[in-house]
Image (cartoon, rainbow over all chains, first blue to last red; front, side):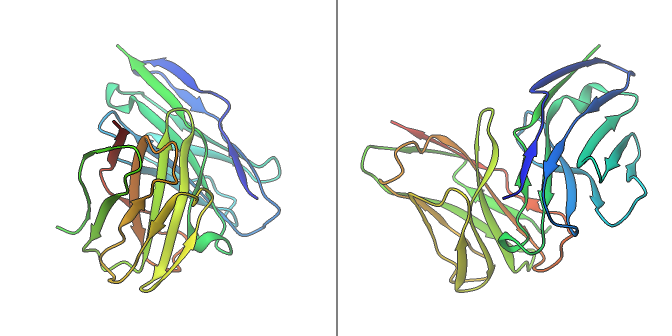
Length: 116
Length: 114
């Protein structure tokens, strides 16, 4: 079974600073996909960024970027120029196309607080 | 606008009662999913369906049942066998077989026990 581990239950960062959220996963598969989702206090799930495992280049979406280390099975999220609206739960998720109908397997989340 | 609608937003269950959570989508997605969210536990997969009239158990299916009679609808029943039903329930959908496509989530149902 695949597992996703987020080792930081809570983090805090000041506005305009940079923060990195860690995520590791365990799999024996070579073909898989990784995602970061954000859940603000509204509880709506929002896709932040995604990465295909066969692509070596790290994905970037505006202020959000990932550090994908396939050999280490690590998929960290970097948020640059943090904004108050980035305050949310962040979930790392793994998907193996050959399992569970393309369902995502989520980590337990990291609660990020951005302070003024 | 296309999207996923979950209802009700809040639901209360009495002891021994079955309750049904509604999930409807107008995105023409084949795949639909139910997740349970507990504080500090992330999201855990209850059931999923890739096509009408077919569904599969996820990691925590015990005490739950689903049906998929229409493409647009994937209701979840929390049965009396589920002894700890208090949680936030999220429904999601996606294009079937599209590994890199994002999940579309509903706004969730908070279920509590009276």
